[in-house]
Image 1 (spheres, rainbow, N blue to C red):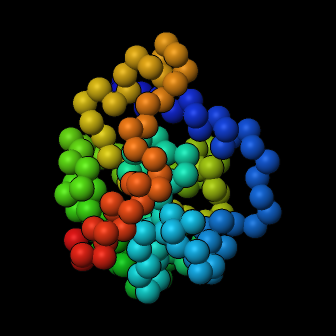
Image 2 (image 1 turned 30 degrees about the horizontal axis):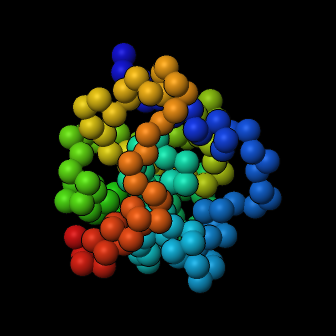
Image 3 (image 1 turned 135 degrees about the horizontal axis):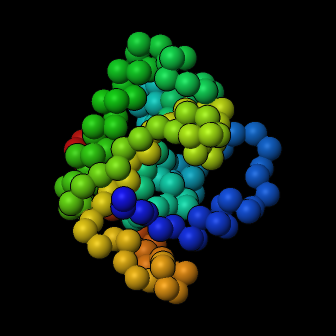
Length: 161
């Protein structure tokens, strides 16, 4: 069994959660760069994970606050997975990962950190990305700051990748 070690996520797990839903609130603001929103479709958007498992960890979410895939309209569902596909293309071109983990956690028992707003995770993977540092030193080496990664990926999305 392979493990993704992400001990820095404990900050997210332990922090006091703000009221409301950031997947609803952030797209309503005119602060895409500060909120790490990379792309806006008609029904869904792409946001970078602020507590990533790996560099380039993206999430695709509908604008509507929906808890499950069954709640998505056909238009929302089709656009959602078109955008997931676009994210893979952008990440492949810009970060050159050797693989991806793509998934949806439905419900707390399934590991959902945000249970009321469905979203798809796209996590780029490289051989050895879970190296000795997180295991021995409780430290994850993230080679690029979120702001820099945001700019690189935003430029790719603008180019229409």
